[in-house]
Picture (cartoon, rainbow over the protein chains, first blue to last red):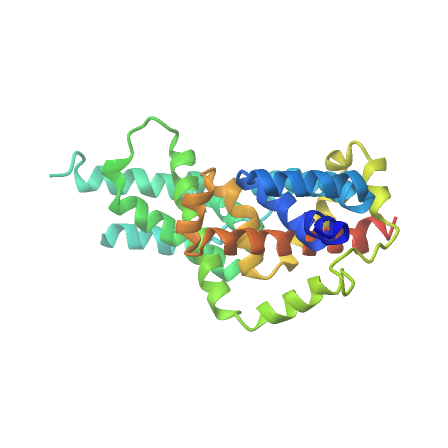
Length: 90
Length: 193
């Protein structure tokens, strides 16, 4: 088999590699996927940095989801009264 | 038969509206950025709570229980908005495609290294402000995929069921959402600093 063909098959594009990085975060990769991704990451600095960026984004999203709102944002009194009224009707 | 007389149940819930209404509202507003929708969501939470009051076992605090109902309502809200904004999908795909060249490799922008230089990025309130804006800018479908993992705290398979999408589709949406967030942070934080 032609060496170049083998290499092309083994190497991923950055688009595919970053896709696998995201998949790996939520689901196990297959053996082949893992092999190809690791190979790509050995050669590609931008994707290696992407791994780190992706983790930072994950942490920031987690923080965003688990952060309470601004206490200055309060439910208008009329709405509270409305809800109380609806509860009485139940 | 209900464990609680209706009057007790209603009285308790009315107290909870006064006690936890503001907290739930600010939580909903932080997640949706829409005041009207947040008011509706809080109302829905309390009406659902009346209906399911017997299911509240006092194992968790009332606030935690109400918050769990609210998070499910927020997901429903995103799901509905995602259905309404389907035409956006093509735009997002095109935009994220433009980060790569014709071979699918990065068009590097020189900002990649900047990410590694800030170890305590998440402790910086102004970074978190920018992150807020970037998450709010995500079209509903992408926002839903990215936050569902943290809101549900569930396995992929269950998340896909909740989102009514296939696993492959979920990974794809997640990937594009991450690319959008990365771009937004680079433009508004790393590039601006």
